Structures are given as C-alpha cells and as structure tokens.
Amino acid sequence: MQNLRRSLLWWYSLHARDLPWRRTRDPYCIWISEIMLQQTRVATVVERYRVFIADFPTLISLALAPEEAVLAHWSGLGYYKRARLLHRAARFVMQEHSGALPRTADALRQLPGIGHYTAAAIASIAFGEAVAVVDGNVERVVTRLLGVTKDGKLPTPGRIRTAAEQILAKEQPGTFNQAMMELGATVCHPQWPRCDKCPIQEICRTQGEHPTVPRTRLRSRQTAYGLVQRKTKQRGKVEVLLQQRPSDAAQMPDMWELPEVDLSVVEKMEPVLRVRHVITKTNHYVGVYEFIRPTKEMLEKHPIQQWANAETLLEIPLTGLARKILMRMDIMPRPKSIRTGHVIPEALDPFLPTLDAQGNPREDETGK
Ligand code: SF4
Image (cartoon, rainbow, N blue to C red):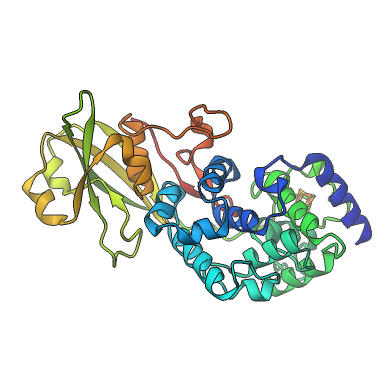
C-alpha cells in the first residue's frame, strides 16, 4: 500500500496537467471547478472556468448575481441544473455560513448541488480532510486494481469505496485524490488503458480493460428549428428571434432557443445547417431552416419571444444547441480567451464530443 501511494504521488508530481484550478487552494475556486467538471471534459472546462472566475471572482459576487447571468455563463456546458444549484448554494452559504464554505465533506453535502464526490473533492483539496474521492475515473482505477472476484464478478460499489478509503494517503489527501483522478483520466482510459505507462501496474490485478455493462443505445429524433433574422436601424447589425422554454420544462427550463418548427412545415425546404446534438440519451438530428419572418405557427406556439441583438447573445442563457447553431452560422461571436485574447479554438470549446467518466459521448455534432 505504501509503495502504491509513493509511486502514484511521484508519478503525479511529474505528469499532472497544469490546470488553472490546481494553482489555487481557494475553496470557492475549487468548488466552481468541481461543479463544472461533472460530466464535462477538462478541455471544455478550462476556458469556461477562467471566464467564470473572472466575472464572479468571489462567492459573494456569485450570490449577488442574477440567475440569468449565471446561466448565460453556463451556456453550452449542459446540465444547467448544476448552475442553478450552484447559485442557490452560494446564496445559502452567504445566509447560513457568513459567506465561508463549510470545511468538512459532511457539512458540504448539506449544500444544494453537492453530492458525495464533490464534497470529498472540495474537503480534501481545499481543507485537507482525509476523505477519498470516488468519481467515475477513480471507480474504474480501483475496479481494475482489485480485479474480478473468484466467481468472476466485479467489485461492488461498497467494496470500491472501502478500498479507495484504504488506499488514500491520509497525510496528503487532496494531492492523492487528484493523482487517482488524473491516472484514470490520462492513463487508465475506459477502452484503452495505457498499462505500460502506469505507475501502479505491478500491483494491478487486471492490467487492461475490464468487462463492462454494454452502453445504452441512444434514441434518435429528427427536429427542425427556424432561423429568423431582421436588420436593425444600426448598419450591418441583425437581431435574431429567440423563444424561451417553459418554466416547467423537464430539460433546460427558462433557457432561450431558436423556435422549433414542425417537420411537416419544412418538408420541402433545404436546411441552411445540419447538426447532430446529443441531449442525455437522445441523438437529435437537427435541421435549421431560414425564414424571412416568423410564421403564424411560431408566434402561436411560443408565446415568450424576444428579438436578440447578435452582439448580446453571449449574455443570454441559451441552450447548448442554440449556442452551437448561432456560432456555426457566424451570427454569434465565439468567446475569446481571457488569458490570450484569442478566439477559443474549436478543440477547446463545448462543440466537440464530450465524454462522461465512463467514456460515453455526452454531446456530438456534425458540421454543415
Ligand atoms: S495497470 Fe492498466 S488497468 Fe491497471 S490501473 Fe494501471 S492503467 Fe489501469
């Protein structure tokens, strides 16, 4: 066990990626990064995290911000409930904890949107509490370390958690937890573990892929959206018609999107853009159709609408799909890196496929 800890910590000291939230011990920043990283790729989060921290540098600034501004910063990251709960938790901490995040995993779990994994990550990294983080990456590493039982079964979640607690280096829990997560993310991949580069290969019982439950097949759905633009009085400026999703919608309530149109309406039309977009378990094949003016159907079906100036679109809480379409159509400006001032390259923005901890695609798209 001691060898395992030493090898892993040594490997991490040499190979840890330089990520902005690893340069701070500020509990607020670590909290923001952990919430953003839930089911979202690190490459996607890096720039979004920088912008978020620049605009909401402290817990109090987040608590005082309107929810709409927080959602606008989350646009394209998906799972918008995270942003709402984060905002609610910031207000709760201001009211109940005088603005200071609780210092233990147990107390952190009382906050909206913080579960076992996130609480353990914040408590160990920011406050040095000796509690193991078990996210998807750690679960995979520990499963492989333990190997299958004599009767060919995978270790149970309880067994994995106990093993993770036993393995934890109690004198530096934050660093050790990050090392385990880093190993899972960069070496012990779901489908192609690089065992020859693994610092703990000697004690790993699996040394390769382990049997997994087959992935659920995504459902497919064809959808169509209308793109309606109008010129403004300012030369060269346009506005685009948006609709607000109902407050009681199961997904993305109150977020703004392009008006959805019936497939029968666009049967004989050519789309100006086609994209594929995955939302939870559904693969949406989306056609975008240009309209000169809003149709009667659009006006009747979607009562809450607004004409949004193209330059203000980054401040509106758009759905990921709407954001993707508007950027692809060059209507909405792509965000710039606050570090370099350059437009964020496509490889680092949320428009490429994202994988969850099991390596399943979260979002994907094809071009025009
Ligand atoms: S030896 Fe291979 S399977 Fe085992 S923990 Fe390392 S990378 Fe994963």
